[in-house]
Image 1 (cartoon, rainbow over the protein chains, first blue to last red):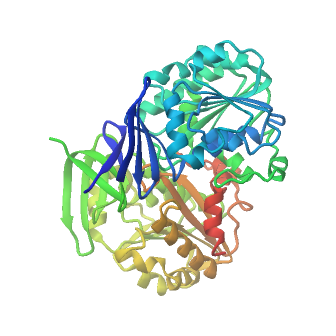
Image 2: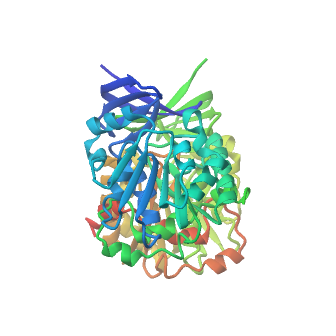
Image 3: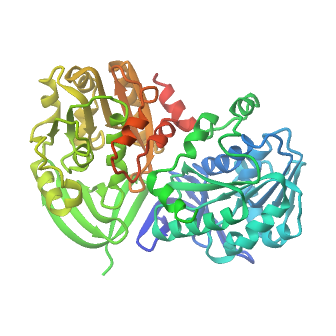
Length: 283
Length: 283
């Protein structure tokens, strides 16, 4: 039998991956969740038909969204992860001994359960004593916080459908308030290549620069994501992502990584000319 | 009617692009050549069923394979392009007034003809008076040259099938001899992500470091290529790709680009940890 899963990148482009077996499928209160087994990408997590992550390349996304701010902010103790029920960001965060508190706000408890069962190498740190999981709405959760966190990581799906509220100006403003006076906010920032995503990326950037004095974009190669060219946003009240990078201190911590390196850090913020232009239009 | 073109990235992964129309199809002495019209990527050039380039993102490949050495080597006058019958590299090269001679060795005259007709924005500079086109075998052509060129750009297809000879140690050695004592050789270097290509990439790097004293790898985001993470090789007798970069002089030339920028240059040579390891294994 031949079975293929297709992830639609646009109406006219799709990435198809041969599937060995469908391991899980269920509808939660929030979304349909599927887990597929594939030869090329290992296990694949699918939400409402969209590829969320794969066993083979999830390390790139999770390392890049976590270690970039951790190598810049000199004393992160309290972190809020919005979304992130898969545990990938938590796995990277617990590598830092100095971290005291990791709050994970994941609305969908089924997602957490599925990842614990089918992606143990990713969800392995969700039981760390520093981790508290809140099955709540991220928007509402962050609205009630003020001056609590050093770092907020927004591990949102795309800005269509249920995740939409995580891409509004109001939400970014609430994140600003939830952060200490030297806090940093990181979010996934879509891809600059296909028209619709590039537009979302631009709009998101506009809203973040309206809330934060420092706002820069960086990039990574994530093969399973649309176009493979993925952006992240670094928004900050005080620390500059390049000027305040302390690669030596970070290296001395001995954090094991497969993608992130401090000497990559500068380069990731150097955007291609066409991406710079996209972003400049709203600055 | 629905029509999709699928580019096989591995036996288990393919990128599919919706096709509006097949504009051309013919078998040359060397390969089957197709031109497809698509909404998302514009026109697509296909050789023996493999995606060669698309109108939408060919600028990334052609800028990155051309401007990186041109911003390092201080006085390029004579260039050899092996392959490159599509004209994309030539279009970038003719932007440099100081260039005196551009030899293009493209075995397949039909490829040149097809690109002139269907990709005029790419093949537009093939009539530049500095360009000489040789419909010859690249291997044989370069074997007969000694101390002739400042820069050789190898615009080869993948290392399987007819292009195979362009990935041998003997060939790289002949390129070395064809270059002046401060010459630079650039080649497309496959992707590090999928196993088979990563292996080719490693093998290629090993062969190049056996021929050239300086050999570094750099990367770009090319969405239509397998994994979107594409590598290039910078092999050199004298100039170092980072230490000898002269971004100011390059910028003063006023070369228009949509991807390449000197401030991107450093970053492109900063490889992710897993790619560094892949490459180090053979160094």
